[in-house]
Image 1 (cartoon, helix red, strand yellow):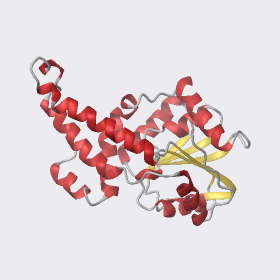
Image 2 (cartoon, one colour):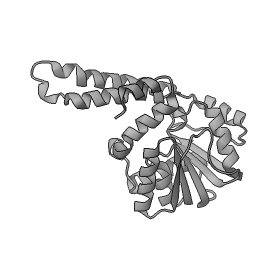
Image 3 (cartoon, helix red, strand yellow):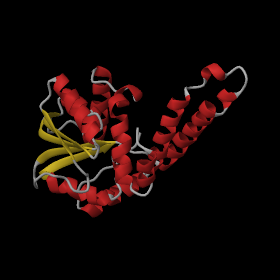
Length: 243
């Protein structure tokens, strides 16, 4: 759990906020979001990838994931046969450690590096495929990160990003989150509902997480916005699809 001083410092530094928040979440992230590495999530990842990019070129010899979290997207794509060898990156050391551990448990050929998506620590023309899931909305300079993606891609390589929040979806999600928090912290004070109230230490920890979460979620996107960003960064043949 981040200290009050760290949370205060992170209020004006989204990269620090992302490190603190995702390090704090790393050990329980898969459980929190019901992430698995079985057919349920393999099918989800494969279907999302196919919807966006089809199945030409499988398996890609090398693939990189930006903002890997615990490895959900790339590890499941590798199990689906999309890529042979993988590299995972995240600004959070805790997330990279868990992603590499998950890969080892699955017997996948994956290495990991702590990396800022705006300055990737890889040579030009290193990968056949770059992927990301629900990551671009955390990055301060999305266009610069896309330029880095194009730099590390081999000529003719492909990038695929999925799971980014839309403007409308973000409004709905935030309203539900606010209502849930109100119920947990206020309604449970009413007579007869005390047994439903969470321990104060747990509520304090959730408050700290919520304070960081408000800083790490930087963007929402309209599809055309993402397309323009990718083209401005230098990509060609850009397609954006919504479901």
